[in-house]
Length: 138
Image (cartoon, rainbow, N blue to C red; front, side, top):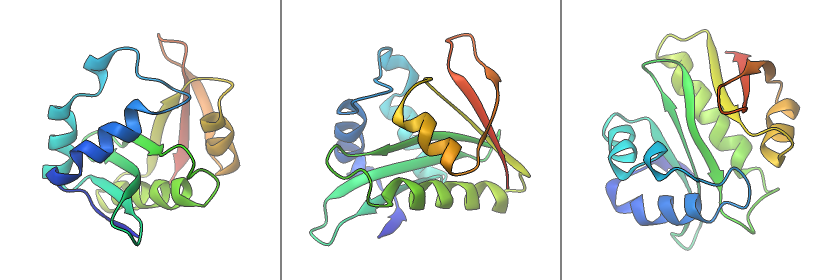
C-alpha cells in the first residue's frame, strides 16, 4: 500500500537507500535527512508499506522543478510492482503540481535504467556525473 511518508519512516527510508545494490550513494551530501524531511513536510514523499507495517520502498518527486528525487525498493522486494506503483504516484503528484513532464537521472547500465525505459521514459542526455537524464511526458 502506498501512503504519504512521515518522519517516523526516516529510519526505513535510509535503510533502503543505504542498502541499494545499484545507484549507491557515494556522496552522502546528495541525500540528507534534511532533504527527506523537506519532502515529507511538503507532501512529496511516499512509502510502500507491507501488511506487517514494514516499509519496502519509497519515492519522492520535487514539485519545484518536476523531477523525481528518489525511487528505491528494498533488496528482495524487486519485481513485485512496488517501484512502478511508487513511480506512478510520484508522477501523478508532479502532474497535480502543474508539470507537463517529469525528469530524473540514473546510472547507465543498471536495472533502474531498464525500469525507466520499460515505463516509457526517454533519454534526454547526460549530466556532469555521467548519469542518464530521462524525461517523460505526464
